[in-house]
Image 1: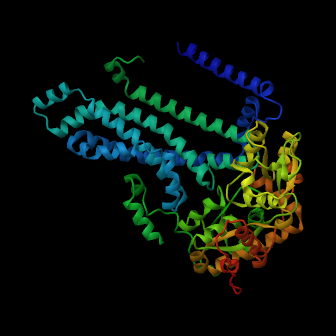
Image 2 (image 1 turned 90 degrees about the horizontal axis):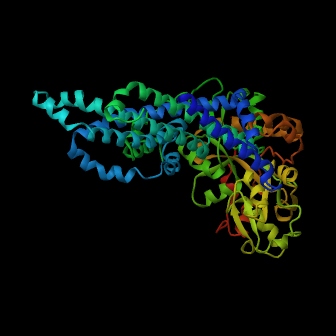
Image 3 (image 1 turned 45 degrees about the vertical axis):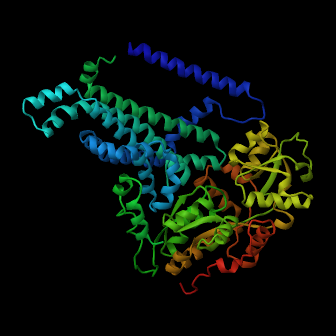
Length: 257
Length: 329
């Protein structure tokens, strides 16, 4: 089953690359210059030998992980608190609904002005962008708790805190995890965007900017391929963790595995 | 504005997250020290674009010219001179590369920026308007009604093009300027999005070899011959707070500029190390010149041109922007 799915996915990707290769080599007019997928892939394979690129990946991933971690530490308790105290949620909700749709990339110029330390500026925008999906998913998770289970525990004499710990938190946990997974993707986008806009000592975005200034579009694309791969890899890891930790959730809700 | 004030603004700021990641960051502790060299600050962050202009920064670093002065310099890649102004104001950078047009505009808007060292000056064929081989545009006058790509609007690009339009009896109203990053200009012109592009190296060479472009005009000729292009800037506050550090930076950079001017091989060897311009390209591209000291008379020409073409509304005395380094540093 999984093997067949993998095969189909690989066939799709290969087909896409072949079409791209043919279009670029024969389809577009002679005057246009764009590296073909084979050139990009060749450079992408060679990139790990470039110390500048490796340092960039390390910097970007460190900012990404730190930002995501801070976002989790802030957003999960906040989400649980808001979910547990409905009156508080009603007070804060309008602010949340206003802040959430602001494109996170748009706050980068503001962050450059306000925060004088390079890494802190980048981590801050990552935190800001990752906060919303985690917070909102935690909130949804808290709303989704089975009222019968809560009532049952209450009728057995359990206190509010006990109900929260024994029913609400485990029930909301899979939602939190989904929020973290969504946030991880957004965090990577912000990590690279901040580097593209603000520059820096190193980073995938800094590398892309440098390659562009040197007229190396092939390297720009190769680094972009790596950014995409890292995003896929992070998503796969988190998804696997989610399946492992919360397999019971899928069983309970009857979602296909 | 002081750092403390900034921190308050930050703490009051939009999100819990920003405040949590904190004002008490640990990055700015290792820089002030009263060591043997007597410098107020021994480690500085210097912003530069990954282009040939700031090559002396990397030469001075590799040859140990900064070390000889007791200075540790960390190069930081920036995305543009205008974008670097908030970074030197906020203390993310101590010194940054800038182009003179950006600096003079910033100064005329009341920004407290100072020029601390010279970097790059135009030479023939370093900034050209390029057109496709079979373009009907044969002279600058043919640009009337056409679309010209520039890397930035209202900056050195449009200023340089406008001086050439004037020679041909046109003004900047006669062409349409469109902003486009240098790497994208070749394809944009080939696909008909524009008729001509203002390019610098390595893109002049690249569009010639990849797209078969030809030069329409050298925009660094006539009024703009030998035009100063880029220099190093710091805030007024920084320059007065760290005079000895600045003097040390200046001496090292000046030494590297002399080396770069006297031996092109030094530049060619350095370019592949901090840019993605390979050795082969580095050996064929046209380079400007690398003056070893700031000269108010030469720079005044830039400000005067800017005023003539409406980039500055009032005269700007360039001398007031130049910091003369402490001689006994």
